[in-house]
Length: 201
Image (cartoon, rainbow, N blue to C red; front, side, top):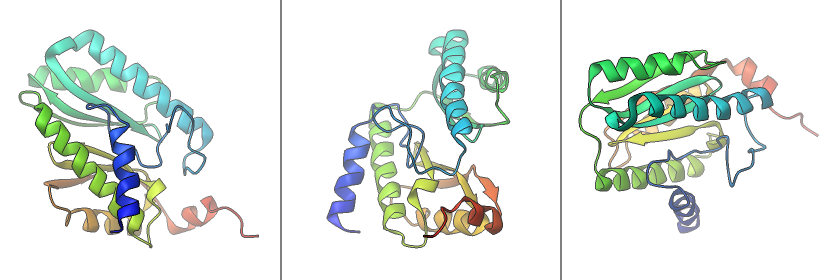
């Protein structure tokens, strides 16, 4: 891994607040849509709205019972973090399902005390390593992946082929600090991927 790549990844990570997920090629960079994205423009807009609405509604109803991140990719919602009871976990999932345009909810919330600041700082470091690894891997497009890290568990989102999904998961499992890799992908075929590629000049 070269130092320039790591520096770029660190800069990206440090620009995020402690509770924000690290997004690779995701919906927002400096407040603007990322141009290179395998989602339709409509899906990108929906994902932003879904994240904001779901997070706001869950916070309003559950308050300090949770430490939670909401991520949406192609209208698939990932809930990750910690809640203080199974009832709160189920309630958060139901709230997310009730948001307009949500196609699926992946409820990865754990019933346990909220993670410490040191754990969250370590998660930022792990996310930085994951991003740098994806950027350096020549047979993967890093912008196709969104990465969320909670307590060393790495959640991978994106519209990818099975080949890309397996390659990324295999690589990330080898990274120091990664406890588990959870695939949260919208799997597409190789033919669908070809259709998404810009036409060759």
